[in-house]
Structures are given as structure tokens and as C-alpha cells.
Image 1 (cartoon, rainbow, N blue to C red):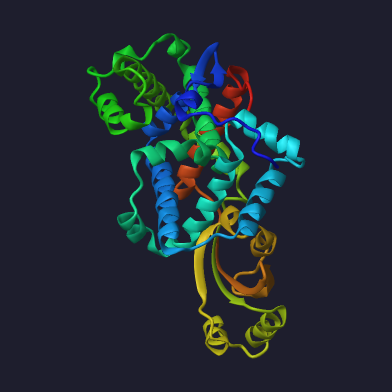
Image 2: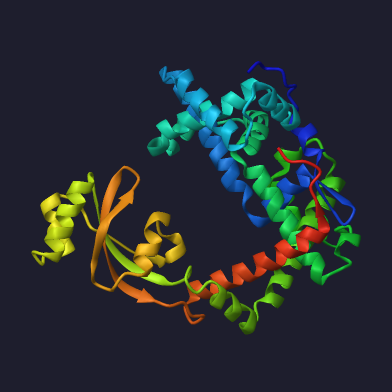
Length: 364
């Protein structure tokens, strides 16, 4: 695939529409600002910093990421998005405003970051990324990682839910919380100003003000959905997924080893800790919801008799032996269940509202 696409600067990308809601254009800069308001942007900036610093360290230390590894990552990316031919991939790059070098650079940076993942603090101290480097790399990072799309979806859903209970929200321009009138708007605009330095203070104030209006209206709307009846309905719908299981497990290298361990548990009467000592493997103890456990284990664990050894259970290239020690149906008295029920109720309502309100002109 040749470098046929034309590179788009970050300010140019910021100026493009991400979606339309109620006839109002929300630009990519609005998507970024909303992520800043939600407190999600620093994690994006941190990961980008780690990648840039790791790449600088690799250059200084002569560490090389092989082209084959980069190509493999790029190929996996293309197939995940059904970009099978070179023409399809080039068309995607053109829509995204990225060159082939931008695209491959993202994968190389991601791979080299993983090489230094246990030394990232030191790497950042030795090779700090400049603001200019962050600005130059952010577009490719956000698009290729999928984070910008995730930020856009989060804003669209929150906006849709907010509008569903406040029909006049889109008619207000955010001036009520603009710079100088709302300390939080001023603080956030100052903290993140380097990301939108080309725009006037008045515009920045307006956009942060609107983002705060939306976020606060969303929180109010979410609170109206968190009634006991609505949350109980969600628990009943997700009764199986939110069943809490306490599980002890042992991971072994081969299916044969797992079968031997199972015999030790069922025939010889050894405990899982005893078998772990014999196998020189530590026993893992977890307690969590069924939906968070490995997908290939769920049916077996859900139907398991408490205390009865299970296995062999496939886990990647290894095999597990497990014992369910506790099996607890979900109830709203459990704060974890209450929070999941609240999140599910809000997400369901937001998805429904977005179908009628939000139009996506195109995705990358």
C-alpha cells in the first residue's frame, strides 16, 4: 500500500464535524473538549506521551521494532475494519486525513511502548515529549487507537439523553457557563489550552461552556432514571450476567496436567492449594460477576455445584482447574450491582434517544 493519502493537521481535523444532533454540528474539537470535561482526556494524553517517549528512547538506545511486526499489526487493523485491498485502506486513510507514515508510525510507537512498559516513568523522565510532538502525533493516535471514536460516541449518547429530558438544551449556547462566569470552565480551558491554541478565547469559552452544560444536564437526566423500579428491572434482565461467583483456579501448561490435577482433587481428596504446591503454581482467587469471567468458562461456572472441582478449562494456550466456592444472585443491596444497574439503565435510555437525535455523517 503506497502513501497516497494527504495528511491533515490537527487544527483542520478539529474543525470537521464528528456528528450532527438536532441540526447542530458537533466538531471533533467539541468531542475532545467533552472528553476533557469528563476527565477522560488526561489518560489519552498520558498514553500518547508514553508512546512518544518510548520511541525517543528506542532511537537513543538503538532499539528497533522490526518492519514485520509493524506490518502484522497494520494487517490485523485492516482486517478488523474490512479494509482488505490496498485501495480500501488508502480510501480509509484519505478519509481519516492520515498518511501511510502516520498510520505505520502509530503501530511502531505502540509496539515500542510495550517494550518499555515496565520502565515508562523513567522513560518519560529521560525523554519527555514536547507539546509540539503531542500535537503532531495526536491525530493518528486518536483515530488508529479508536479513542476518538469512543469519545465521540460518549458525547453523542450523553447529549441525546440530556436532550430527552431538556428539549431546549441545544438552543442554549453555553454562555451561562462561559469563561469568566464559571470557574470550572475557566480551569479546564486553561489546563487544556495547548490542544486548541489556534482558537480564540471567546470560542474556547463557548465550547467549554456548552460541554459543561451537556455534562451537567446528562447527570441530571441520569439521576431521573435511577429509580428503584427501573434499577430492579435491570437486575431482573441481567440476573445471570450479574451473578457473583467466588472462584479458586489453577493454571497449568497442558490439558494432561490439568486432568492429573483434577484427579488429585476428586480421587485423592487433595485441596487446590495442595495441588498448586505439587505443580509449583499459585492458586488464583477471584470474586466477580459472571460477565467479567472468561467467556469460555461462563456456562460451566454458572452451572457448577459449589465446591466441586471443574476442568480442564481452556484458557488461551493453557488449561485451568477451578472450584466455585460461592454463588450469589444479584441484588440491589450490593453496591456493585446497584452501580451496574444504574449504568445499564442510563446506557439503554441514551442509546434509544440517540437513534432519533444523532446523525453520523461518516466514520473512520
